[in-house]
Image 1 (cartoon, rainbow, N blue to C red):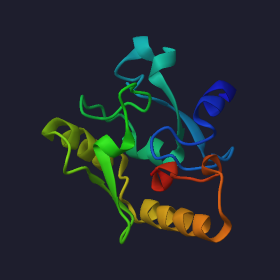
Image 2 (tube, rainbow, N blue to C red; image 1 turned 120 degrees about the horizontal axis):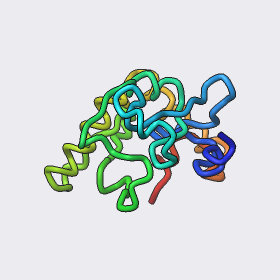
Image 3 (cartoon, one colour; image 1 turned 135 degrees about the horizontal axis):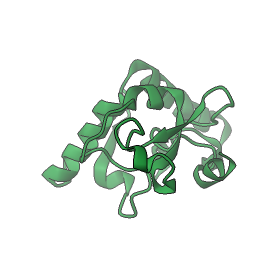
Length: 145
C-alpha cells in the first residue's frame, strides 16, 4: 500500500478525497477479483480508494467507467463543477462518448451524494480561508485553472 499512497499523494484514486486515514483506505480491484480472478494481483488493476468509493463501486464494471490512471484523462475534458451546488457534471462541450463516460463514473461512484457535495464545499471554503498547497486538499480539481 505504501507505493499506492505515494502514487496518489494519499488521495483516493476515484474521488480525490484526502487524507486517506488508516481506517478509511482500501485497495480497489478495478476489475473485481470475484469476476476476474486472473487480474486479482495485476498491478494495473489495483487502485487506492476511500471506503465510500469502494462501497459504491463494489463489483460494478462498465466499459464507460473512467480508469483513474488513464493517460488521456484530463478532468476538464470529462467534468465541470457547479460551484453553486458543488456537483460534478458531465462536460456539455465534450463528445457524446466522453459525456457518457463522465456520467457513468458519477453514477457508479455516486460522486454527487450529499456527503461528497458537503465535502467539496468544505474543501473549497477551507482553501479560501487559509491559502493552500493543492496537494494538501481533497478534491484538487476544484482548484484547477
